[in-house]
Image (cartoon, rainbow, N blue to C red):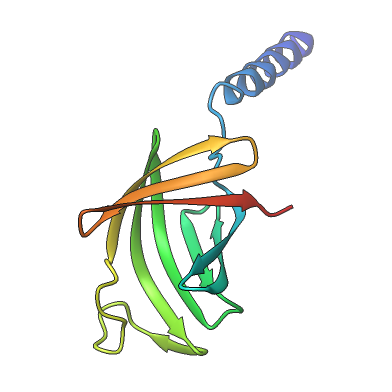
Length: 136
């Protein structure tokens, strides 16, 4: 009887391990960096996606940071801003001090090619594609 119970537990564990392989983990989880150049100025932007559905975007050397909740559905990334900090000071996402024109809820698409992540969105009728490298 004990042998049958042991065999049953082993089979259950093996089945769970096999089935867990059928659901790939979120491929966005990790840290991604892009170097932006605009009007002759360069700045880095880092996005860190966590397994718990939180995301942090950091601009430059930490001078501005945005905290978000995110979900992934296929190739669609939906983000909701939950907080910001500018020059080290917390700013509520709905505060009058928050930079104007920054959308609080964003729906984007993404593609992955190895360690390259491209996030595409459309803002004010303009298509924007940013490519990030996985930080190792």
